[in-house]
Structures are given as structure tokens and as C-alpha cells.
Image (tube, rainbow, N blue to C red):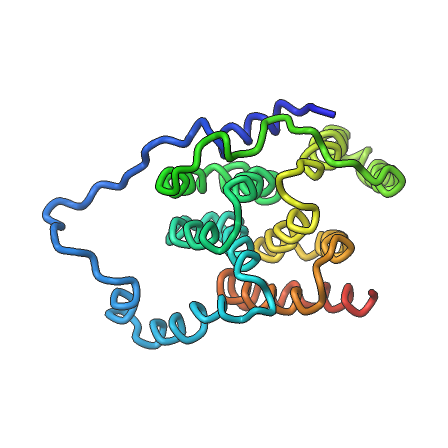
Length: 261
């Protein structure tokens, strides 16, 4: 089953069309070597530098969530929040830790729908630069219209019926595109596993304080293989990158999901 020119468009944006040179020029007269990340933070806030070194950078040493998954979570947070500062650093790190270029490309495409088109497109130039540095070309990126994964027809019919009954009278256009574009296409693209699609969706919902959507998507993530321990580690990791208040806003819903399973 192959369709959705809409997805083809964002796939092209994320995967190939914008893979162009995007090199920032130095400020006039800035011929001195830039200070290291740590020393720059130290010169402004020694306490922040210490927390960064002893807490944030040490997160990757905690194997309760794999380094590869931590890279995926971090990229999802940064895209969701429209934050490009150090995005190149974390994308490069994610590639080194086992996240593939195809998975990063699909993450950009997926999050365009869950955090907004512009947040996804804002990430593209930096990712293009990192891909270029790694020698990644279009052959390593997902097809625009791949052969889609099989769908759980019974579960999908139930979801469609519930959404139609609740929201068809509000916006039939949104209901139709939710069915045709998201669940009959986007969620079935094969280059990001179902568990990982649900994982980045949960991260996006936490990062944008959309807790009312969490029950469905966290259950879906756990049905696809996300464990209780990984949820614990995910929240701890996300707290540093999206902020404590957003994580605490999500935790009552997440607690209810965990207790119900």
C-alpha cells in the first residue's frame, strides 16, 4: 500500500531536498579558537557547568535506557521544542551510538505531525550538515513511498469509529486526515519501528505539555515493547532536556497508565 503525497513532501524535505551546505560563517575578527563548551558555561555559571558535567552528560552512562534510545529521546525533545542549539552535537552523538540516518529522517517526518511542520523543518538544516559530515546520502534514507507495515485492522476500526463519533461533527477534515495520513500511512512506515514511533510521540507530548494524549500513546508504546524501567529512565532523561515542570505535568497520567497495566 503506497500513498500520501503529503508524507512524500515532508520526507523529501527531511531526507534529501534540503541536504545542502549550511555552514555558519565566523564573526569578523573571530580568528581565535572558540572556547570549549564546558569553559563557556563555566565563564557564565560555574554551578550550571558542574550540573552539566556531573548530571546531564552522565545520563548516557545509565544503561536503564540505551545510549541509542537516549539519542532518540534527545532529538525528539529538541525538535518538539524547536531548539537548534547543540542539535548538531546530539545528532552526531546519536549516529555514533547506533541510531541510523533513516531513523533520524523518519523522526523528523513523524514529529512534523505531532509538534508542527515548522519545528520539523527548523531541524532540517542542522541535520543535513551532520549527514553531510558523515557521508550520508539519499541511498541511506527512507523511500518516499515504502511498502507499509501490516495494520491491526480490528484495533484500527475501533479507533476510527471512536474518533468519528467524538469529532466528526467538529472537523471531518481532521478526522479524515487522522485516518488516511496518520494511521493508514505515517504510523505504518517501516524505517522506524512501532515502539520507537510511540516512544518519540510520548516524548513530544511530554515536551509540549499535551498530557491528555498520553494515555493512548503510552499504552501503545508499552504494547510495542517499551518497559516500565525504560519509562522511568525516559522521564529522568527528559526532565533535563525539556524541564522538570513538563515532566511533572505528565507524571500523574503516566502513573495511572503504569498502575493500570
